[in-house]
Length: 185
Image (cartoon, rainbow, N blue to C red; front, top):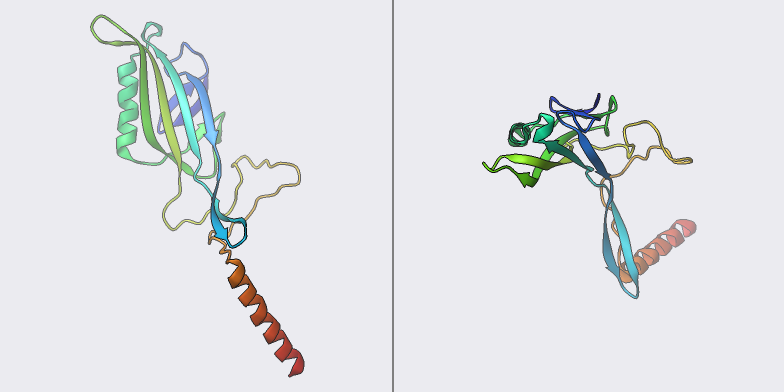
């Protein structure tokens, strides 16, 4: 039974299938940095959401009718093509963007007497693909569901600049002077 697909390759639920998924890991994050302030804790600057990452592992066993070398070659070709594709899980695309295969890792647990791979764990690393100049407008996971009391958030992708205490003080003095002039005038 097909449970996922990427780049024309179908992943299956059964461990005895051609491409069984043994695990999926999805990483989401927020891009932040800290800025020093005079006589205060550093300020947190929120830049916006990080690109998501997916790690998919498949267990390939030659005795179950798979040829690990053939499957590895298919993913190597996808990697070298450097083209983003939708990653579909359970009939639903994961996230709102396409995914780029950025890494293929092969862990051969057993080799045959002629060097053929008998038991392999194939680990695929995919990164969310956002075209240059494209603006990300929501932090949704693409499923339409959100946490209670939380709605999709629009991000201002320009980092917020936090000034030092001295700069803040100067701005406050300017504002006070301008307000005083307006009330007198």
